[in-house]
Amino acid sequence: MSENCSGSCSTCGSAGSCGERKPSRLDKIKHKIMVLSGKGGVGKSTVAACLAVALAREGMKVALLDVDFHGPSQPTLFGAADRRLDGTEAGLIPLSVAGVKLVSIGFLLENPDDAVILRGPAKIGLLGQLFEEVDWGDDLDYLILDFPPGTGDESLSACQMIQGDKAAIVVTTPQEVSLADCRKCISFCNRLDVRILGVVENMSAYVCPDCSAKHALFSSGGGEKLANQEGLALLAQIPLDPKFLAACDAGRLPQGFLDSDAVSSEVAGITKAALAMNS
Image (cartoon, rainbow, N blue to C red):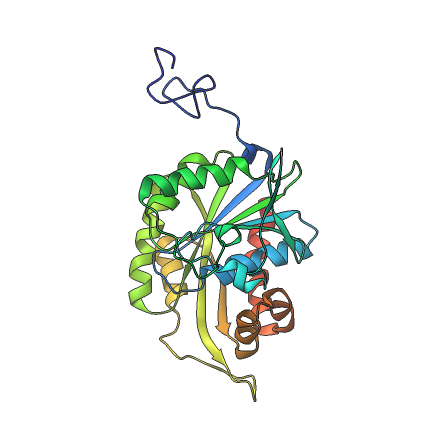
């Protein structure tokens, strides 16, 4: 380690007070979008997956990294829970599903039902390994990151490790119990200088399978209220569509997303914000 480097640098690791940093494989990816929420169970994984599929359909080259180590959902949503990652000398090779390069710790487990038991330092080490040991390729336009809830180890470490163009999307549901936690998530992004593309209100209403009318099961307008209070864009108000939910449970999210006009029309707003990063 150099005398003036309190951490590490191009000689001894990643980043240090000397201002030098080791080149990262993520540097080759144009845009990194972190899907975050202060609250669990708000649908971050489905929002991240739908955004990745939508961007791929726009002709973008997209990867989706499932950073929820303790509850990885992407293998189930994409119908790939029984698949595993292969590797070459260049690194781990992402799966390709619906035009999306897909990486999850779920693809590294012998049994998909096994619990992943990790302390903080181990999670940070695993996150760094996924960033640097996956062969992302040289021409990705977007890396979408699906995070666990809260502002803990994974989110903090990713924000510090990822350089270049990065942004966040904050997902909430309409209720105040979710909004309160998401305000903390917005504060987290502001303190770490991560720009926020906007707010997504998920589960905004229930789509009747018979008449297609929308009914507010919870309170309504919470996402819009949060966005207005924080000076952010409201990107979407995604409803609960039983047809789409059934497709997710069956591992057919990409097709279910396309088949649900109620969901795909709202995701268009998120996609537009993401594509603006590429202009």
